[in-house]
Every structure is written in structure tokens, then in C-alpha cells.
Amino acid sequence: MLLEAEDIGAIRVVHVLAERIDAAATIEFKDAMRAVTAGAPGRILLNLGQVGFVDSSGLGAIVAVMKHLEAGQELELVRLNPTVDTVFRLTRMDTIFRIHDTLDAGIAEDA
Amino acid sequence: MPENAAARTGAQDRTQNRIQDRTSNRPQPGVVLFYTLPAALLSVRETCRRFEADLIGAGFEAAPAGRVALVCAEALNNVVEHGQHAEGAGELRLEFSSGRRCRLRIADRGSPVPASVFRKPAPPVIEGKVGLPEGGFGLSIIHSLSDEVRYMRRGQENVLDIVLAP
Image 1 (tube, each protein chain N blue to C red):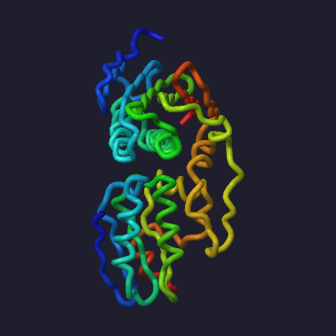
Image 2: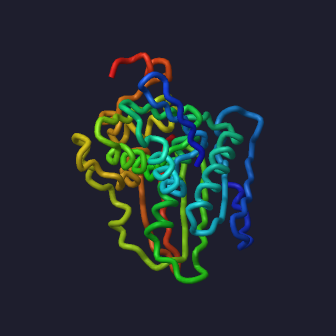
Image 3: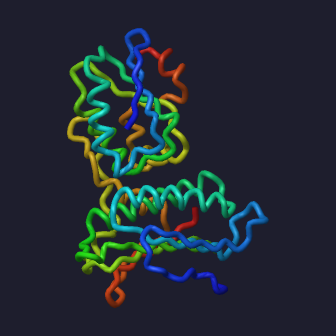
């Protein structure tokens, strides 16, 4: 799975350049996330703008990544498409993650 | 329903679709989509991707097509991950038909499974980040987006019917 990371100020932005985070992709997603989040100082914005589909396994993988972050790190989500948003709402995970409509909004917001 | 059930060929991962009316922008009664796929997660991905594109090609809006494809993916993954497939019996059949409501049917020739496997689970406990569940959301999603989920054993087949109004 292709992820691209950049640091914007103290924020690490991770762009997911894959169309799906699904049951067939959970292991590679978790491995790739572990690599790109290592050493990030604080907030991590996961940009899902290119992701058209997340199933319950993909959701579980995102939760697993969040639970295994380093001390002081915080995972937030950016640009959920309507189907992805549905998955987060139905499972009430929208109450656990901070979710931003745009990357700019996520970057602008104070932690 | 007219004669629109595509014939099975037994070929793996093969699709045969007959879409009756491509002229209107609304889902038409009698849209039938039919797929067979190996019981493997990558095949589920490929089939669901094609299924969603086929729904949109048949006139479904993106949002309902996405919801149907999501229910389909959850159900297929569930069957692949928890089904008991004897050697050489790991082929799944997926049928979709639309009408007043839509029906998804998934059939496989694995061993019978307890009907309780597909019952609506208690909602996972979502409280704070510590101890948050990392799985067990699939069936909740299926039930939340569906009107009816029914498992039947028919002869040598497991049949899972999901009725939904996307």
C-alpha cells in the first residue's frame, strides 16, 4: 500500500494513495502506517481523500494503528467520502476520531 | 421476473450481467447482476469493485451503490473468513436483484454454519480509546444498512439473503 508522508510544521500528514482499505489490505496498511508515523512529534493527519472504500476490517486496522501510536501522538482523519463516513458513523467511531472535512481545516485547527 | 438469470459457467471470478434498461437514469426493476468468485479476500475486493461500478452503470446513484457494495463486501468477507470450505468447494456465488427493494444473495457449498453467525450482534462498546475493539463491526454494518438478513441451508448450499432499500 502506497502512503506518502510530509511534515507541515509539527503535523505529520499521511496521504493514502490507495483506492481501498479493505480486508485484503489490513496488514500492509498497518505495516505502512507504522513506518510513516514513527517519530512523528504529535498530531498525525490521515488524508483519506483518495480512498473510495473502507470496510469494517479497514476500520479495524485504522483503530489498531491509533491504539499503537507512540506516546504523545494523536491520529486524526481528513476527507472521508460518503461511504467511508457511513462506516465511521454506523460504528460510532466518529465519536472517537477527530474528523476534518479538508486538509486545510485539519492543519489550521489547534490540537 | 423475466428470464434474466445468467447461466452459470463454473468459471472462476467470471461475471455475467444483464442489465435490462440502460436508457433511464433510475434503478430499473429487474436489474440482475451475477458473479462467481473464489473464496479469497482479493477476489472479494475485485468483485465488489466491479459490482459497485455495475450498479452505477445500471443507474444507481453513487451513495446507494456505495452502501450496497459495502454490505456486499462485509457479507462476502464474513463468508470467506468464517465459512468452512471443503477442498475445491471454495467458490461463492453472488446475485443481486433490484426491484421495490433490493436483494443480495450469497451462496456457497461449504459446511453448514450456525444461523446465529449472522444474527445482529450487540453493538460494540465504544468508550474511550483504551480497549477499543478492532473488529466485530462487519455484522453491525450489515444489519444497520439492511431490512432483513436471513441464512438458510438449502441442500448442499449455504444461502445468505440480505434485503435492503439502499
